[in-house]
Length: 116
Image (cartoon, rainbow, N blue to C red; front, side, top):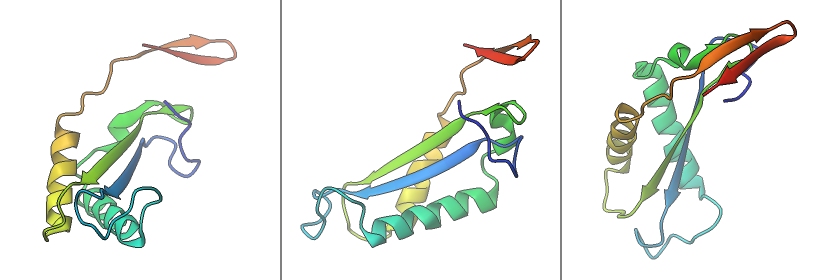
């Protein structure tokens, strides 16, 4: 649970990360993500956000105070083409299997407390 962005107080966060494994191709090295990996993560993130496949407002626990932050990590194991489609399909499958934990909110005089 994290604090929401000020301009979107009732929306949760959704972040994507793509890593090219050295197993995928000899051209890839472990460590810092390459420019291609960053670009692929941005394409996947834009596609999922623009399609509204995930309701980010459903990730809100307390508007303006606490929202769920989801991070989707995709590891490319074989660089044999069609990476965008394969990565989007893998990320969507992961998001479909995500189950948000149930929490309860207790109001106090000076704020609120989230209990799991």
